[in-house]
Image 1: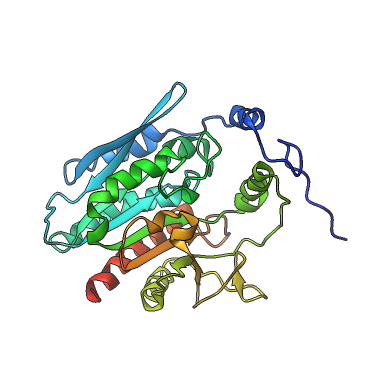
Image 2 (image 1 turned 90 degrees about the vertical axis):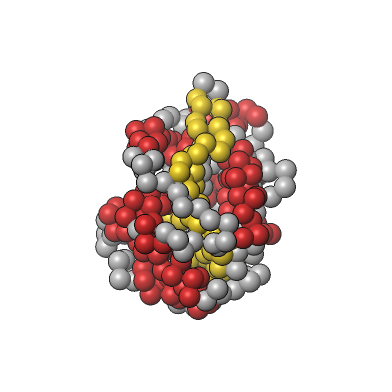
Length: 307
């Protein structure tokens, strides 16, 4: 027998949150890990090989977070730009550490071929709270547009603006987790005063292409590389992955600009959003980080070969 989902514990069903509900939600978001020791320290170790820059700062109450980017040291204006972003959703751990792994272990292979610009942890407050939203209960990955309500998103757009037209490829590193279904989607429905519609978390890696400029061969090149590291999510019995029709194996499509998604912030011909599944019994944290790095390498390789 089907039962109705348990109402989210904050707010009144059917009524969007106001300031009281947002404050209640914020009071329930304790710091669970350290941006400074887990991310900034790793970035600091890269200074001997790459240029590291401060591109903004987040201030939430007593907490202040420097926003850091990493650039190729051999930056040349005649080379195309590759943008790599991670941690737009702070709880998606392998997005952050996969980006850092790529820089540490693979970036040197592209010296003199591309300019790398990497923002490994776009949402450090959310990284520490293992959450999807920022401290204002705003999703940065729906906020990449003019007049953004998320400073995380606005700061990244300012960083990228000078190279927007020169970008060859942008890969945005994400995860789809079991907590998407148990916490984050129910919280979203409650925040917006809408009913929660249960879904099905895909078991495996998949990609999100741009429905406004699909690049199926590019996406499949990434899928084939990642398959050597971790398994690819199959379509469900509706031919969908996480509620969206499968376009090609392991790939769905979203209108990136319309939704204000991070992967829309440049005019790069090649764009993709990775979705790793860290909760699978068939995957380890090491595999998830390695899958993200493999996706970046394959994406750059394809883009360079087809520019």
